[in-house]
Image (cartoon, rainbow, N blue to C red):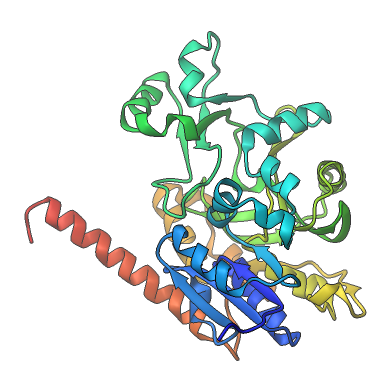
Length: 381
């Protein structure tokens, strides 16, 4: 029997899990689809489907879409799959993000062109396949994906310090040249990474927060593990930048605008725009007390307190990684001080504990499989 759902969520990493919980608590009938490692699959909420390949999504869409369903796309992999293989869904259904925004912001080269048009600073960017024709290249460079087409890329970013390192990458990643880009690397500690998180409808800001990354895993260029609300000198500049970019494309949905400060030049650069809910989205629950995610109704009171959020599993690994690599950068008393601020925990919910517990099980099995692979390669098994 085909059940009638109000909301479809595609992608069940922490950001998708947040929407799943909140829409269900608001009384909505929710169907959610996740890839097999997504922590949201452990949740007690909603009707969930697990797929191992994105091509399996077609069967679910054909069965459960109806004219009034709202679709929230919470994963780069799902978003790019729909853009490339089923973009008609954006015209036929109410999708977040909207199609125009999704196409531009899921492609870093297109984002750079829009930023240039709007007078927004953006690092010099090259296609990897074209880099050999460039005469003057300043190192270091950061190697990254122009578009995230899979949930299992072998890396997120790679810092390229010398030309010989780039040649090695060219040999190893020859088949990926079309998908990879290089950007001028803006040096700095994780604290120079500032992000704006927002919710927009037709280009109009409804919710907003600006945060600063304090720790990342792996250190120093990884995923955020501990972040704090930021109200420093660049907070209004990044918010203004975000509103200009998102109003230009009539953006609808949750969005993250990542920026980096060039301390030497005292200049803010746009790094990328993620046209989907972000991993630290749960911070909105404390930023806006009384927030009802469904249609953003209810009396929303914006908190004046400093807010922070942590992914405990990732933060433990970030701290260990920092101790190994640069022990002078981490002080135990500062870590204790961070947790005394009562950070919001992105996965932890007393009435829905399985996703929080499941992340540790996933880390254990991934680590175990990695060691088994190494041992097999060395001929010990």
